[in-house]
Image (cartoon, rainbow over all chains, first blue to last red; front, side, top):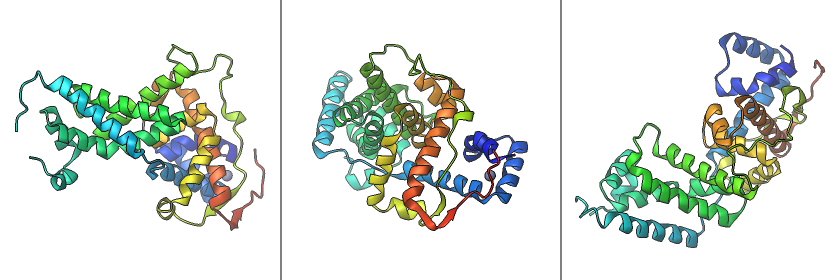
Length: 86
Length: 214
Ligand SMILES: [Zn+2]
């Protein structure tokens, strides 16, 4: 496997969906190729950062509008359904 | 009476159960739990605050309406984020004047692995993602890097890597082939890696390829 070929299976490797035979070749390449090893590590960390970050705060007024819209809709749809069980 | 301290430690499954029985507090507690995530996803997809707010509202209204049909095969968070991404994609299609499902550009050539740029700046990062995520400054960098991606790459990355859809599900949501979705995902991942490593990489541990084997 060459570095360029490694790129083409990078997604599957990072996602853990790579075919076991290819996985072995992939890891063998990485063991002898530091740049590819670092790239894979960088990509894993990149994904983690985006997944775990909470980048934006819902502004307070938006939040209030959201919750009053929810309450309003709830009233419309639950009034005819009789009292809710305790 | 539901008091706020118990609701804070109640599981999603339990809250969904209570909401289905007609408890509004339980539904609002679920909204409190996920509104930031939904809003962030919408804003990252749409890059426009008003649209992101509208999508957030539509998402929870739609979740409320469809709650009875929610069987809990997926977690509540997955379900609600899926509703949000579909709502956001609808806005994107509307902006483009598309009424079709597909976001494939008619003139676009099928992306291929051959045209993918190779990593250039390669270095170990100075800090772990856990350390970085706790810092507020990092968010600016992350969002700037994301904004630099083409929309078609950004959307695939958000659906697959941030929201956790499978490649197949992301392809369906975007109206793309799985092959094309995978190539776009790879481009997005590589481009973000490149951008982030230029800032987060340790220059002293920069790795230079000694051989060009491609
Ligand atoms: Zn290599």
